[in-house]
Image (cartoon, rainbow, N blue to C red; front, side, top):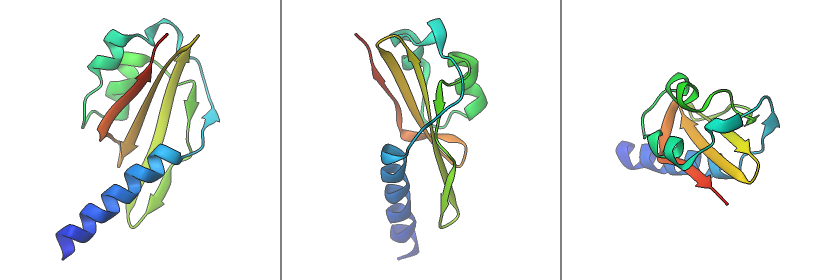
Length: 101
């Protein structure tokens, strides 16, 4: 029961990540590329992601529920976007979601 409850909470946190609102904080620049999006892997720290992509252009407020902290960081450059969700400071199983034109 305890394990399934934790899995349910993790699923809830991923949904919260997907629907979280964002706040403007910086600039993504020329690092918003398909190549860099492919470098973002599950379990990476926020610092590791910033080392690849630089400072995010948007960042959600950190949310906490049931002891699990979530946030989303987004990098934009022109029509290109990379959004990365974090749970407890690590990239979520969903990894990076990107859009390129």
